[in-house]
Image (cartoon, rainbow, N blue to C red; front, side, top):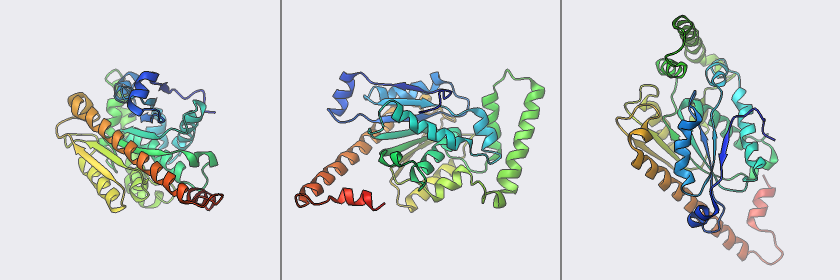
Length: 304
């Protein structure tokens, strides 16, 4: 069971919309992981893109302390959160549906990193092995060893109402911690806790990915995103990227709503088409097997 303290939202499509788009097949489940400090009303605008396509959507944003404190000091608090998030799928009995992730900024990407590791770990719970991930949309992420960008993200999260003296203290402490642990000492600390960027660059998931970013982003450097896209291609991962050019951090949908929504819908459709083709190939292989003989699919599962 997922922890009752997890503040998530799940939305199911009406039967008519689901049937119109997916015609009897299982509708996709889209898991949206918000940026640090974002409110549900902000991320719900993105989930509407998928709700209108007849998808189930799950919205969740990691706690600020987990993003800015636990990760900075090498505590893997988000690993436990990732486990609870996947358990939500079982709580609502949608674990057999194809899954798409839509991830925002480093705050969402840090949590996504642990989801990926959990699904690919040899120690993962046996029931998680049946989860089928379609792909991932990554918005304004990931960033690597960018102290200035991290400070801007924290500043935006704290907001203008915070006491100026407290703001100075928090910013100074955070800057010192990030600079020491994630820059100066990282050649040593990475053997204890690798940052999200290096972990995903060197051990990416195999499913298709779509990166949405902008050269005008002052929090996440566009070169970090482009380097990650290049790394995915070198690993043979199907990857697409879109540079919106002028939009600010996590503002691509606000500035380019039509194109952004179209990109997401097209990516979802292409991922679902790939699943349909794979299922047809599996059915053909099973039909070719002698009656009473084990299928290739069953053999692959039993030899893992």
